[in-house]
Image (cartoon, rainbow, N blue to C red):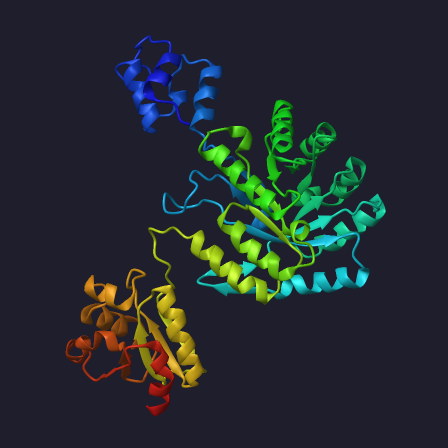
Length: 446
């Protein structure tokens, strides 16, 4: 928890030297507590005092990064337990599991399947961002490194699930430049694994037989000076795994216990092995509470569509509406002579309406107005979807590109027709249906 002005004042030399730009040390301390000044602006503070203030000002959950370049992802950094309190910071990421125990044909099929799920939804790329490479109990270094090499070809962030330090070292020699996560530390090997992860400069995953062992092992690794960690909360049962995930997150954010303040891994390939339907259901649960990384046995469109949609809703700022880019979208092979249909830029409206327009098969220039990401009636009531704004958009964006002069407006704002006819001379203004589901019949009859 951040220090108060009084707590910061106690750390100052109390010289009132004014070298920081403030008349007194108390005034300086208050401004530091408010975030208006940086603690380093006091020239007389000790390094220990500066470090104490900086550490206290950091979020209770650390932000951990893995991957390199465009593939780098951030985990953690959360400050609240519930989305309605404040925006969540780092979205849940999904990983598909590969294991040395699998048949070569199964591994080959999985590697071919992973890139197939890759699409865009509301301006965000939806794909499996990570691959969990698990080292089976009977695997040797040669077998495991061969699997890691295959996983590297996917261009995803790797998680190395390996508790054998010698085997893990061989695997890191292949992929450490890609900044994977080494998920292999527990009570029996944490010193060796921590040294290995620190030497390679990668994130270390910590696990244990129960929540107490996880906590104690994490604390022991922190004493070694390693705080580049994630916590594998996967327990012996689904119930225990859920309890671990919640307790770790609450410990960090409510109890302000920084030993709990790390992102989490939930391995559903272990907790619900072989049950793909259960894994999908649990993935939705842990997307909400509180998996930073969720490992599954597969990620086909059957799993991806609901999970990515859920994730996008949860990890979108509730104070900022989801919207699409305003502009002209050509549907069903539309050209400059095709009909113009307009609506607002609210994402839900766009996808519902565009879906029905595509179903109709009628070529359409779908003109999306900038309405602040609000729905049709809300934006109309707020004056963001008015005769003036629509006319301006049509004149500036549509007329230079489209020859057709027939414009369909939403039925819920039929009241705008006279105003648009006045502001858009030469255009035929057509009132469309009130509900999107009626568009197919409406368009075909036109």
